[in-house]
Length: 327
Image (cartoon, rainbow, N blue to C red):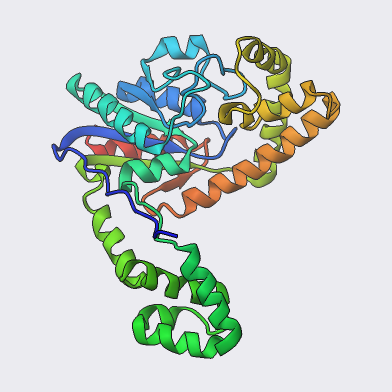
């Protein structure tokens, strides 16, 4: 089997974008939309959506897309730009977001990037990296050696090839031990070297073009967030989520599409297939949305540039944004 080929790191234009950019992220149902409209009024913003589902046309209720009335208050970018059966990924988002940001900057307005897709935030500010190299043949050989020679022999080999990785993993951490050797035998570079290359590439990512940025993350008490999720799930059904999914199916969008397997749409499709009752559908929708919110928080906690607030601390958010961005 051939070694996996890594795509080249995307190259981004290096022109500086010297306009104020406010980033507003947080888990689903935390209150980003309401706060974003406050920021729009105070700082003359245009909104760039950072949501992997709101890009899809005809998918409004299940994605919690801003209402027509809310969209009429301020220009929104990257909403309703692809059909539900089109592929949309982080690389395309970075391109589209940069185009939108440059357009907003040309109008001397403030950019408000808001949404809940952590991968898009990471891609926009730090660039996209291909995964570390893999080779199943090498992996299988290493597993055979593990059985025949023992982990101590393989660990000693890893420490000789890559002392830094050897120091940061334990001899009994079999998975990472084999991974460290697989990376070297597949690429000819150590795990440490490849991580250092990625960190260096981050310095030239698209976010390096931005000179004035203030990044905000919203949070609230877990039980309060769960109550908001429960309420939103119920409201989505009352607003016509089932009918929205039925319309999508009637338009020819199959339940197996990735967009139709997203939270909410997957649940309604399962209900329409007769596998769940309406009560079951709501129960699982609430459960999975809570789990998704937890995963979002995990993503955002890794993003060190975020300043954390509750949605009730608008005055503090606005004051810090004005000070840091010179507004």
